[in-house]
Image 1 (cartoon, rainbow, N blue to C red):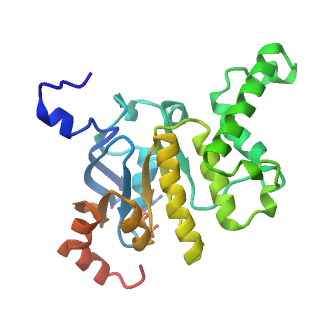
Image 2 (cartoon, rainbow, N blue to C red):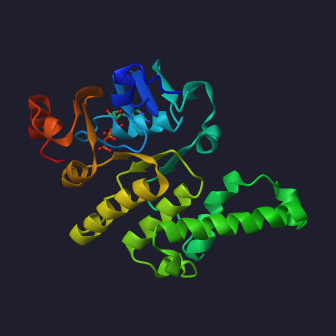
Length: 268
Ligand SMILES: Nc1ncnc2c1ncn2[C@@H]1O[C@H](COP(=O)(O)OP(=O)(O)OP(=O)(O)O)[C@@H](O)[C@H]1O
């Protein structure tokens, strides 16, 4: 419970995600070096940095794909480094990948139902035998998937084959599939990759819709700086595995270290 006798408790909400002193090495290469930052509930936080800065490595540590050599990560009161990777979705961390990983020959609804399997309690055998519990789970899963599409404003596409959707619409289905698991934190890996100007504008609105309709925090790694600066409330900049700035978009954009990092990396 929040201690309202402490004014700072009212001003500073408890972090949903707290990354503390994370380091990661690959052989002799230091990919992450003592990275710390926090993400509040319902906050949109952007991770930026030139090529090779360590952004993907950080996401992979947060998803428990890589184990850091030092540091701590607390998520919603749990030390996630003590948990295996398969527990992340159930714990409330959802993720989308840079390359779309949908089933093109299946409908939008069917693809979102795949995401919902994690939350179903009945096992494979129960489902195969069509036992009552499996049927109840299936009906509940369908309802949850349809509700997710409705809250995102894309329920009219429920029966459309994914292969018939344009690239931007397919990305929205991927987000829906992650959101149906009711995550508290959504990790978006370069969501603007491959989108044109109009697509990026739609994406920006969609990220805000996801946060508002589902109350999730969003952590996004992105090369598209303009999108980050216009959608994120907090930006963390990294370079050569070290955090070089952390603050509002305006603060980070005005940071000498950030300007230097990008001037020294013409291929960003
Ligand atoms: N599996 C790996 N094995 C060895 N080195 C790796 C591995 N993954 C990443 N690295 C190294 O770690 C550093 C950080 O890489 P990372 O992919 O996290 O950066 P990034 O910021 O995501 O880059 P980009 O923007 O180009 O995707 C780089 O020096 C990279 O070569």
